[in-house]
Length: 120
Image 1: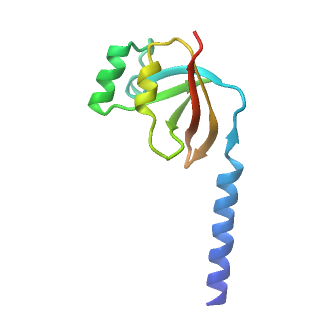
Image 2: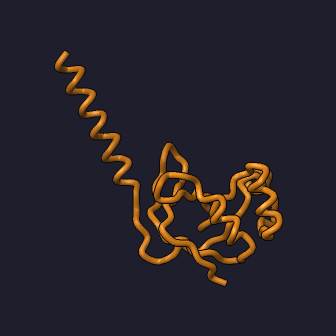
């Protein structure tokens, strides 16, 4: 019984340390663009969105993501909710800056956003 409890504690600590080790805080904005995850998956060449298209995707429940250095990031607010509405407001910009903490959860890139701004 003690071995099981000890093993559980060790595995829990390894899991927590792994999640903490993959989190990085950005001090300056990550410069990228807001894109449709659906467009990325389908391999569309032109990923630039308009305000109208972004709002249409938002209403349909199609996720908007942040493209930075050829990597896709899901953007979350501090409370853990997805920031699709905020991304839709900046989707028409060619360049968007996001400040926040990045981490990888089960192979998925996530930014916990503290600030978003246009960089056009």
